[in-house]
Amino acid sequence: MTRLLPILLCSLSSLAPGLGQQAKSEKPPALIQVLIVDGQNNHGWLPTTSALRAILAQSGAFAVNSTMSPGRGAPRAAWNQWNPAFGKADVVVVNYNGLLWPETVRNAFEKFVSEGGGVVFVHAANNPFQGWKAYNQMIGLGWRNNKFDKRLTIDDATGKQIITPRGEGPGAGHGPQHAFMIKVRQPDHPIMKGLPPTWRHGRDELYHGQRGPAANMTVLSTAFSAKDKRGTQAHEPITWWIPFGKGRCVTTVMGHHGKRQKDHPSLHCVGFQTVLQRSVQWAARRKVTIPVPKNFPSSEVSIQAPKPR
Image 1: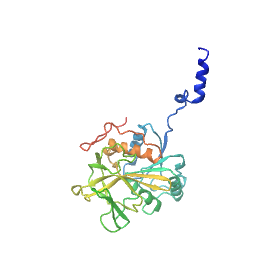
Image 2: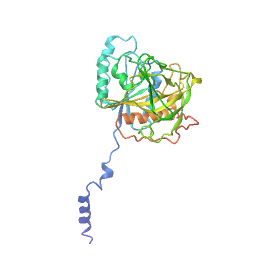
Image 3: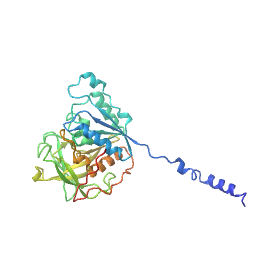
Image 4: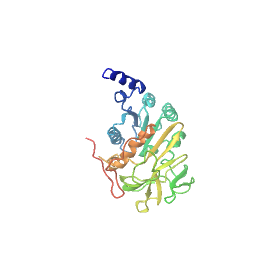
C-alpha cells in the first residue's frame, strides 16, 4: 500500500491541476495607476494634491503620480512642452481650475476617456473650460451662470431628477462653509454600497445651482442646500457619474481647501476619503474592494481621519 501512495497523489494532481499550486500562483491585483492633474486653481491645489496622494496611498490600491500644468503667464513654449501621460494611467484625478489646456492635451484627454480611461473630478475641477464641449459632457454640471444650460436637482420624496431650464432659477454658487448632511441616492452602486443612508460631511462648500448638459447623469448622493446657509432649499447633487464613450467620469464637489488655509476638514473627513478611494477604484473598472471603515461618519457627527505624517 505504501508504494501506491505516490501514484494516487499523482492521479489527483492530474485531475485537478493547480490545486496544489494555487497559493503560489495567486498574485495581488496590480496597483491602479493614477495621474493627478494640477498646476492652477482658485483653491489651494498644492495641499489638495498632497492630501489626495495621501488618501489614495493609504488604501494600498493605487500608485499615484501627478502632472503640473504651466502657471498663469507661462510662455507658450512651456505649454507646448506639457504632455501629460494620460495613456499610462488607469484613472486621471483632476484637481485643476485655470487656463484652457492646449488643443493637443485636450484631444489626448478626450481620447483617453472615450477609449475606456476613468476620470474623477474633485471640487473646483468642474469650474473651468466653459467652452470645451466634451469636458462639459464629462462633468454634466459645472460652475456656470444660469444662462449657460440646465440645472439638475433631486426631488427628495421620489428621488427623481428635476430639470430647470436655461435662464430659470439660480446659477452656480455656495453659501458659507459648514458641515452638512449627505444623502445616498444610489445605495446599490459600488461606490455607495454599505455607506449609511445619511452621514455628516466635514465643513465644506456646498455647491448649488450648477449648470450644464446634465445628460446621462446618475446622481449618487445629494445634500440639502438650506436657506439659512444662503442656499437654494433644494437637494443638490454632490457625487455623480456620467459615461463618456467607454470611460467612466465621476464628479464629487466635496473637497474644498482654501488658498490661505493651512488645513481643511473637508479633505480629512472619513466620508470624503472613502468616497474618493472608491470612486477612483470604480472609475478604473475594478471591483470596489475598499471597505467602509468602522469610523465612517454617522448622521449625528462627522469624523476626521488622522492627518498623514
